[in-house]
Image (cartoon, rainbow, N blue to C red; front, side, top):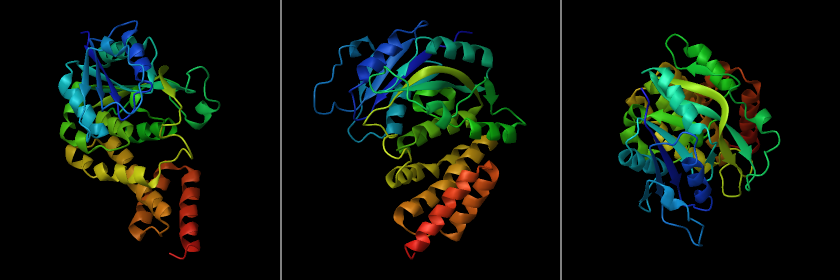
Length: 311
């Protein structure tokens, strides 16, 4: 059966690149059934939104809308069996919808989502970012993760192919309905939320094809050190606690525990304090599971830094 597809483009306090995002969604080789834009009020200036009327619908979100709350508005405004997410500063490759529809058609009823690869380019989308593939490992083969009996092997595989981005996700509507009430509380790390939501609802196809173009620019979260700052981490922790009550799969639970273990330690470093014994114990278990030496190195830096600060 041919699944219907809705593209949801969210513009959160930014519209500079929105025209290009909409254009990429309406010039697909296999057109989606609808393209819905959810955006906050336009910032100062006069961005070129001349292509916005090619969208099926434009929803003005309230000023106090959260990123996750905008997703909930989109869920209520769309009708597709599958929802493809697209950030306002990213674009889809022309074959994105065709590949996603094909994956859901052959994936079976247990398939909750699809995640594809992405290419990273400069602000003008004229040149690729050097070294992106080396520092952001992605899938090099098609793999179905989240199936029964493969929790540990899937976890190990995801650790090695952990690059995530909102615009690479396409989720079945039923997977989003499970987390509908939690969406307004998602203030940051929406891409990680989508990963956990998909894996908790079923299996996830990992596609190696770069079907999304990820734009580097001055207003994005990756600018600077490339690491989340203290405020980013606080925003993550504000919604992480609500997920277990929704029902996490064994694989999603492992990934969730990793984040819950590492973020308090990172917050301690930002605040110049020594992590608590409980935080250290959770972090040690996380490092042991992942078997990545650089994590132990980062943890030691936190400990030594807090000692030097006399805390």
